[in-house]
Image 1 (tube, rainbow, N blue to C red):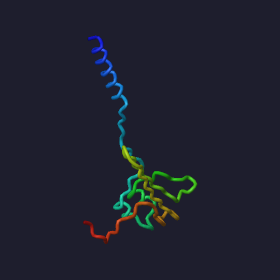
Image 2 (cartoon, helix red, strand yellow):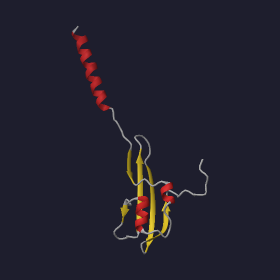
Image 3 (cartoon, helix red, strand yellow):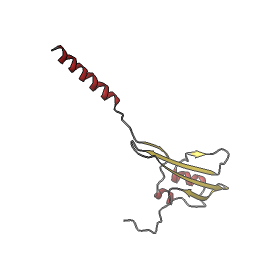
Image 4 (tube, rainbow, N blue to C red):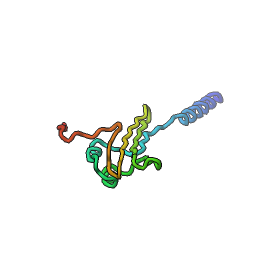
Length: 113
């Protein structure tokens, strides 16, 4: 009888210890989410205020390169590889000159379906 109660206590203790070992992971999103649709609203010649209104504030604004804005987005799922997207905007005389990066603007002439 005594060995049975020890066995029950040992099993209960083992179950508690194993439960403490389980790891709960969450997906983590960081940065600016810039969609193709939002990016399609932005075009060369726009001023900085118009761009900021369309896309929001950039994640990175280099103090040594004030005419370069960088929008960065990363998504780390609970299990899997991290996805990183980046868009760079170049300005000249406070007007947008070029857009480069991982997200491309939607073509407004392409049918959606």
